[in-house]
Image (cartoon, rainbow, N blue to C red; front, side, top):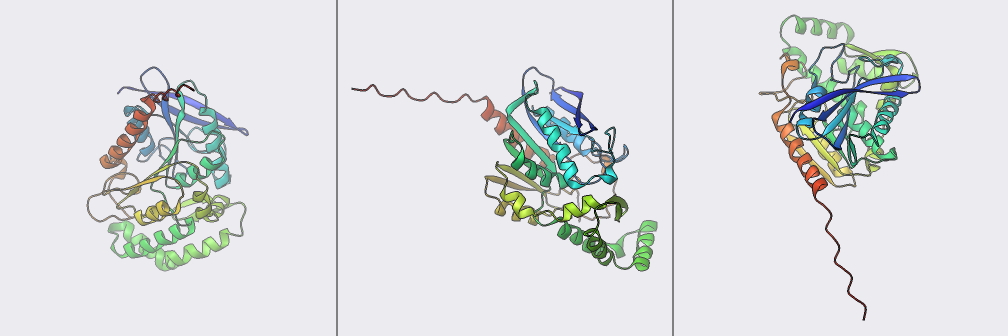
Length: 329
């Protein structure tokens, strides 16, 4: 199906959020998904400073081919959006997402009865929070690589995985990483100390791996009560986890499916890693392949196409007329 991309910008508290609508090239109103990104200073396509795997651009185009419109935007301080990314807290980013959602309700291309929040990684927690507080509730959540544990638990799990992989990382990169590890101490130990310090901060920045991040964002993220957030979700959920995701593991998604109190469908996508591509062989956080060039997992797209096909089919099926009441004697 041909698609159309057009600019759609949102103003919030003096911050201009720049984004793109991706629409099927047809007349009428469409089911629509708001795409909520994972962590980091990523733009609407899923890139940092213009470089990266563009997973959200690929996802938006695939959805449009399935007959589903989508909106994705540059985070504040990323891409063309205004604001300062390193001064923003996690809750600021949730408020930005809510402003984008509210801007789409009632738009002429949007079917208001079939609006969805589609989150990836950190965006899955954001979608769950928004669903509970949005005046216009989504029909369902679509969560890619969701997690049930706290963000702190996930970060420590990743640190432990880094320690396991470090001796086998090849070449100059491996040499540099091992030298740094000897100089600064085990990565997991350094991470735990940094997280303890972050709990006392309300501003400034800290280093998380190779990136510098907002201390307030990290503190607010690790303080999230995931059980409370997901028990408050008011709508059905589709959970799609990656079989080889080392960051948001399939086990975490299974726990989430058992935790919630709404109808939930969960699938483990074969071979899928955290960046939504397929990986042959053992997965690794230090994956030295050119992930940017990889297409989205075909199995992931098949799940999305089938699920949205059911949604669209339901949308097109007219309600059955009720039987006439029997005449009173």
